[in-house]
Image (cartoon, rainbow, N blue to C red; front, side):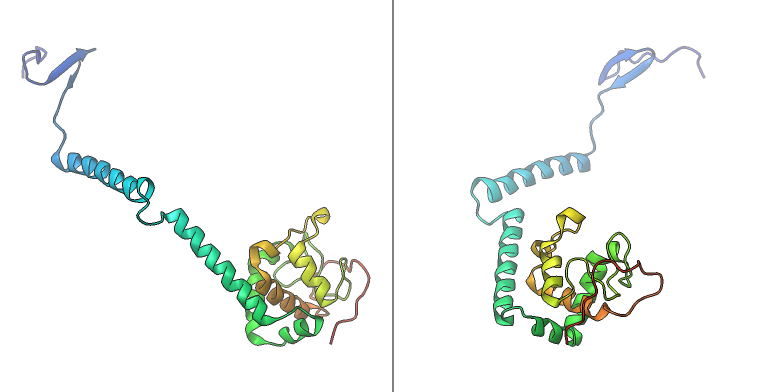
Length: 195
């Protein structure tokens, strides 16, 4: 092997040499070029189809239309369910389907503050007979729906919808007076359960 450096100045495609590093202008592979140009064509067609000429609604508009339809369906179901009453919430707390939905919602949004068993963590204990913001079914539903911002309780009504608020209220009613072990001490006045 020769110790003499290779002089590529005469080679085709050489761009320059700097600090003994030879930079050459190599041709890119065809598959790479096809991918690049295909992506550019796709982007132009996508933009023309969804943005410039609005042939179909774009993904964001389709999502918004779907959410509007869900809200209208929710409103129709709430109207069909009728006015919220204490007796209706107590009856709902005896319905297995509503309790299953309420337990699922409770586990997703309430358990972080009230523990999975309702014993209270950041939020109050839901398994005793003492209630800070009212322990009647309608008061519990109002607390879930509107929250108590001064105490750090979020308003869950806008996110959950009325039917899920009712379902989680029904589930919370089943937790009352179960007095789980290790729960927070009672806070607020004692409230007799609705029957």
